[in-house]
Length: 102
Image: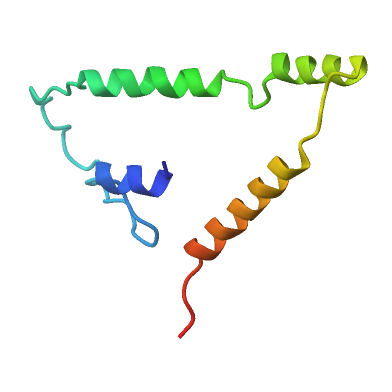
């Protein structure tokens, strides 16, 4: 999710826009309004998901340790054809996603 899309959906200022100016404090402050803000349950769920993602390590240490152990014991086998297939699939995907030249 891009930050720009969140700002746009929330109606925040866009790049190059200035924030609305607040009225000058020459007179008495306006009376507080009875407006209330209420967040949906989706907002709460989103906050929880963001917190979980922030606390999730980028590297799976258990998997790294498992592979390290397999290498040291001689159990780790490299499947060259699987690696080649993966590389070819990646190239195909990049070519498919690349913009077409006129």
